[in-house]
Amino acid sequence: MILLDKRILTHFDYVQPALILPIIFLSYSLINEASDMLSAKMVAYLIIGFGAFLLFFLLPIRKLEWLIPSVYWINIILLLSVELVGVSKLGAQRWIEIPFINFTIQPSEIMKPAFVLMLAYIIKKTPPDDEGYNLKQFIKISFYILLPFVLILKEPDLGTALMLLITGYGVLFIIGVNRKIWISIALLIGICSPILYENLHDYQKKRIADFISEKPSYQVRQSIIAIGNGGITGKSVDEATQTKFKFLPIATSDFIFAYTVERYGFIGGAGLIMLYGFLIVHLLSLNYKLKDEYFIKVAVSAVALLIFIYVSINIFMTIGFAPVVGIPLPFYSYGGSSFITFMCLFGILQNLLTFRFDKTNRFVKINF
Image 1: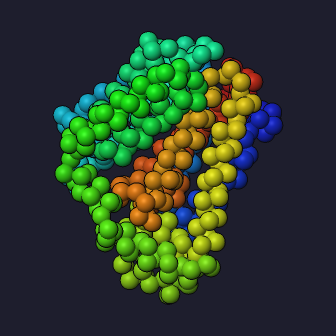
Image 2: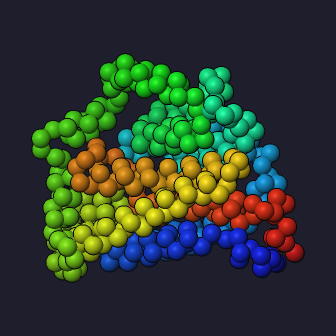
């Protein structure tokens, strides 16, 4: 039996669920409206996701901190295994099939919590000085950022790879790196950009070409029509013709923001963006309270950056301001992998924040 000390209630961050739960409820209402089958699956994902949150919230992470490097390297081995024994779907080899039970896992999704924890572990062990990390320290930490980036990029999964890359270096920017290093990196990227473009896959080049062309792709055109159809206050189920008649592609997943605006209008879309905006600002604001607690600061900053990147790219994609990529809206787009991953991340955050004054997690007692 699990006994929880009442003092947990005074340290728990209530702002997070206050902003996340409305996003989840609105998502479920739209998915339930679109498909009974998807709705039933989403219920299963919700149950698993909240179970994952509870598991990581109660896990004594500080006691098990020494295991973080092992977890990171196990995930690296899984990413390497994708290339050797991975399962291909839709032209990409990103999954590993578990024998005998006909179940697949996506190591790139599992890598996200391991990646965040590894960054937090390294930075806690070697915090920056007043002028930020020097070149030697920067290169050492960069190794742990670039290794999963390269392995995921080879699947190919450019979207997830870039998420980890931007998040990793975004965290370093927040924590502190000598500015001369950033200037050098910016110049290097500018010089190497033609080479990077030539090494993209054909489908990735096509997405960029569709993005910069005068005429948007079919998916984006339908998305823009759906957004325009929503007006200020949105349309009823029967009047949301783009979604009802299946003109809007992947309406419950990649283009769910366009579906939201068609149903709830500009007000609904703006409200959803505000919820995400408040969540991101809240998480980043915690850095001012945490001072030199680098482990928690890295975790909070990384999750805030992940949400910002996911939300920005997904919404820009639906209105034609970014190439079409398979980037979901956190807690909102249909799908189990992304939802469960973010529930794990927020379980870790709540654990670190709730028990930050109690390094031994004595607030949680487990009796059998």
